[in-house]
Image 1 (cartoon, rainbow, N blue to C red):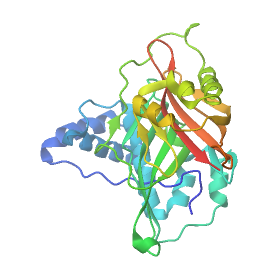
Image 2 (cartoon, one colour):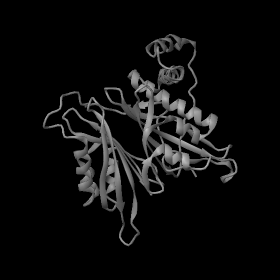
Image 3 (cartoon, rainbow, N blue to C red):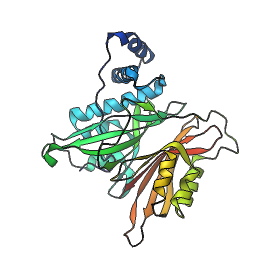
Image 4 (cartoon, rainbow, N blue to C red):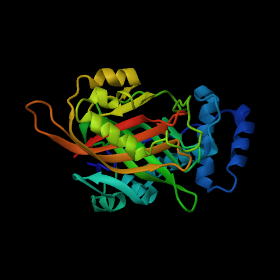
Amino acid sequence: GTPQVRILSGRHPVTLPAASQRLYIASMSRRLRGSPAWIVLAAVAAAAGRLLGQQQEPLPQALDQMIAAERAFAAKAREVGWKEAFLEFFADDAIGFDKGQAGLARQQIAANPDPPKDQQLLWEPRLGDIAASGELGYLTGPVQNILPSRDGGRPRHSNYASVWKRQKDGSFKVVVDVGIPTPSAPPFAAGFTRAPYASRFTGDYDDTTPPLATADGLVNAGVRANQVKGYRQHLAPYARFHRPNQLPVVGDRQVLQWLASQPAFSTADSRYSEAARSGDLGYTWGTYTTAARGAKPRLGFYVRVWVRERNGQWKLAMDVLQPQ
C-alpha cells in the first residue's frame, strides 16, 4: 500500500468555462503574472470552477496559488505515479508518519517500493483556507486509489488533509500530509469552498492571545480526562474531525455529539506547533494513545489545523488521527 504519509490522494481536472467567462479568466492570469506557468494554468482552472457558481467570493491570490500547486501535484501523480510526485511536492523538512515513526517525509517516501505502473491515485482539493499573510494554509478533499487488478478495479476511498507552506523560492510545498481511509467517498460540495471564517483574527498580540502551543496543550490536558470536555471550548463552528474507517464528522455540534461515545485519551502529547506570521492560522502535531475498556491501546499521531478568532482565541478547524 501507499505510505502513511498520505494514505490516498487525488483531484480531478477542472474544465474551463464557456467563452463568456474568458474576460474574468484573463484577469486572473494577470493577477498571477510572474508566477510559474503551471501555477497560472491551475489557478485559472480553479477560478473557472468558481465562475460556474461553485464559489461566489474571489479567493485571495495566495490561496489560488496554493490550490494550483495541489492541482499540479495531482496531475503529476497521474503522469508519473504518486511516489515521484510526492518527492517533488513535499518540502525538504516536511514531516511524515510512517511505520509508527515521525520523520522526514521525503526520506520515508523514498524508502517505500515503487507503486504499480497501473495504479491511479486521484484527488481533488475541495475545502481549505490560507493565513492572511499568505504563507501557510491547508487543503482537504476526497481521494480514490484505483488498481485494476484489485477489487475488480473498484476504487478505495479516503480523505486527505495537507498543510502547505510557501518556500523561499515562492513556491508552495507540503509540510504535513495525513489521510484516513473511508468506507465510501467523503462528501464535499462541488468545486472548491473556502472554509467559513466570520471572526478572523486581525489584531495585535497581547496577553489575551495565547501561543498556539498553549492551546494545543490545553486540548491535550482535557482529552486525557474526557474528550467532550477537552474539545468543547476549542472547536470552530465548522470543525472537521477525521478518523480512520469512517466518514468525517463536520460541525461543532455534530463533533461533540460523536465525541460523547469516544473513550478518553490515555496519553496526548504535543510535539510541534507553527503559526503563520499573521497569527490567524497554524497547525500542530503530536502523539496520542487511546484505549477502550478491555481493548488493546491504539497509538498514533494527531495533526490539528487551528484558526484564531477575533477575540484572540485559537479554535480547531480540523483534527486528524492517524494510528500507527
